[in-house]
Structure formats: C-alpha cells, structure tokens
Length: 211
Image (cartoon, rainbow, N blue to C red; front, side, top):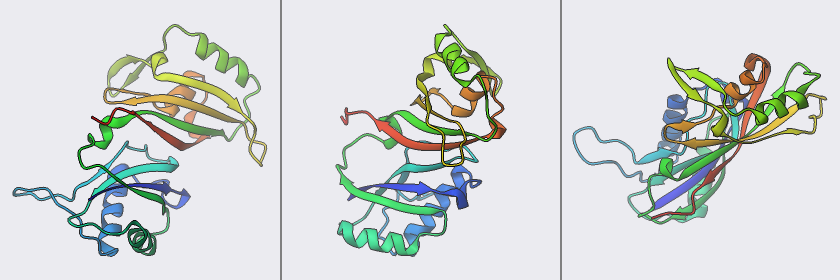
C-alpha cells in the first residue's frame, strides 16, 4: 500500500533542516505503530520519500511524502494514529492512497509556490517586481556554479499586506531536478536582503503524467 501524506511544517520546526524533518517524520510513523515497508539488501531503509527539500528557516503547509506499508491500513485509522504521534511543529493535513506504479515523488514535482513576507517596508516594491520580470536573464551563483535564475521564475506578484501591514510577495518557481528556483535568491535579485523576509511554501504542483 502506497500512501501520500500532506503535512505542515510550522513555526516550531522552522529551523529544522530537511534531513531532520525526514528523521522526525520517520520516528512519528514508528510511534504511530504503522507497518512501514523497508528496502531490501544489507542497509535496509524505510520506504519513505519526500517530494522536495524545504530550505532551513522556511515554513510550509504543503509538504508531501509518500509512504509504503507492508499491508493495507484504513486511511481513517492511519490519520488517527499519525495525528496522535505527531510532535509540535509537524501537523498532518490529509492522506490518500496512490497507485504503487506511480513514479518516484521527486520526479512528479513541477513547481513550488511561496508566500514571502517582508519584515521591513520596501517603498518601490512594485518597480522591483517589474524590473525582475522584464529582465532577459538573471545571472546568479549557487555553490560555486553560475546559472540563470530568470527562467526559473514562473510567476511573481505583489499580494495584499498581512494583518500587521507587512508587504507580501507570491511567487511560483520551477522545482525540477537541476532546475530549481529558490525564493530567497529571487528576493536577493530584487535587491532585498533575504534575512529580512519570512518564506512560506504554500503549494507544490505535480505533473499529470504518472507513467
């Protein structure tokens, strides 16, 4: 049985890295008493895949993981068990059974959507958005390798301010292997210090092609 989970990584776990989120999720499933399937071979690993790494310091209400179970379990029973075992900062949102033959979860992700909240006001924010979107290319460097950020930005727009009157941006970035945009690099390209921005992943978009 293959189960797809959507869960939130809230403020409590904002500074928990990707690998630790994976370990926390695995321990949660063990505490829930689920019959987790494992890979074969000498170093057996739980059959648990996360869709896309979330950078340190980000929150999200659209994290997705696939879990394989050795035997079928009713989804209602799974939901109750996982919710009871979940630690602060990790909140289960929904579960669904998906076909066993579907591709690996990471291969199905096309793009990610983010909400970025600016802690300091930027008077010319709309102009900076227009300038970035009008650029033919945005040369950047990541881990010593140069790349063009511009084709990775699929959408960028100003949202309404939040309840504290802070400016917000909504962006959709490509999220495929070797072609992944990061929202902190987008705001940096706009001349805004990412340290003064709160990043929240609001959605992952998947391919319809499951073959």
